[in-house]
Image (cartoon, rainbow, N blue to C red; front, side, top):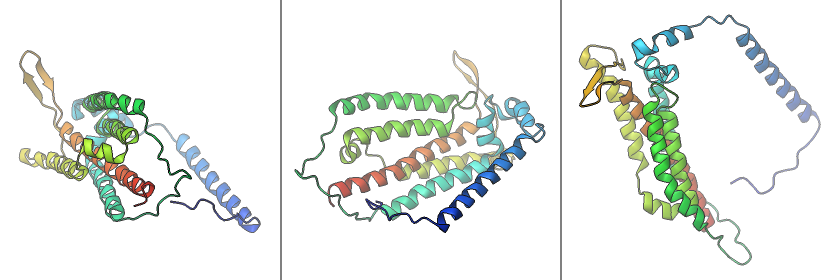
Length: 254
């Protein structure tokens, strides 16, 4: 919704000022990076790499840190992400944008039938890949964040291919509920540690004895990661769809 043309830039002292600020910022970041890279390599990272399997129950140190060692921080992050989606929805829900200038012949660009057909087949594949990344994240690269974003990409492509209104009628999901249930599941996982006399969000890695399969490790952090997964999908879809619906209303002149 920026103007079609901006004001002509003025040269002079302002240009020199902007150049000096850019050089100062770049030099400061360079000095900071140099200071970090030249520090001794010994850090707390060795502790994480050494204890992720015996204490966190997973071989993927990054995911174990996110959902276990610093799970309280991650809980705050997904809460902020969900709130951001709700705020954007509240701000844009009643917006009435100015319509775009119509084409001379008033024609509406046709939708691609091939794109719509391919995207219909792609959604189940994206959902399967998303769930696969989510399940494997505790031991290999993956997890709730990346798994949720993969599903978001598959869903957003449906709107690109079919248009906002047609895709809305087919998907028909209330993304507010995904945010709410995701936060409830994440918090409930943390509160569950109280029942065993442990602090909030303390993780455990019991083994579940399944028929035929045998004993399978099950990290309780998977419950927390489920909450992350749902909030990421719900928040991202709510934000993107509000912008898409606003754009659709503007194109239709409503």
